[in-house]
Image 1 (cartoon, rainbow, N blue to C red):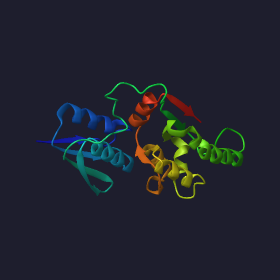
Image 2 (image 1 turned 180 degrees about the vertical axis):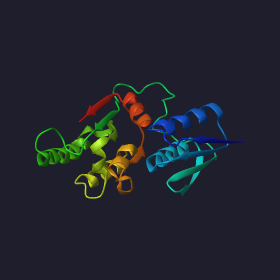
Image 3 (image 1 turned 90 degrees about the horizontal axis):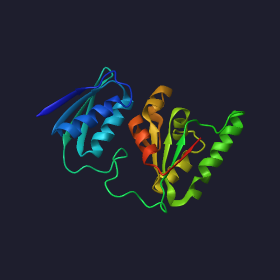
Length: 202
């Protein structure tokens, strides 16, 4: 049995939520999802992959058709709720929520320097640093030319999950220029902030 979802015109995280409801409610072996922007394509593909689907995509005149086939056990997903008891307080999860490419209000040049220093200091949080979530202007930190790009790559290589808002990347026209992190959606953002033991927002 094949299930078809037409998610054209849905704002983030609409396409992912519809896929989540379908997968959890029907568990289809084959699923076809139609979307109309690249951010939705990446978000839906990543979500279905984490739920154990192999996904292929075709695009015609800006309309993307995703063909998903269930292949086996799902892998861990950022949206997944914990199945075991919560972690002990001694081992907290810290999420860093970045909403701009500069830090503070005032002089942009100073703000850029402060952001550089802030990202460079995050390793001092140690193993408690869990996720970095970038939205709005913060997504500009993940593209070529960003002064903190290499620092973010080092954090990701060290095991820190970096989530980058796909809608924001698409808005700024830099979706294809991202060089670090996973393109994400508002469902992942909200879930991550909820699951974190501590949130640092700048």
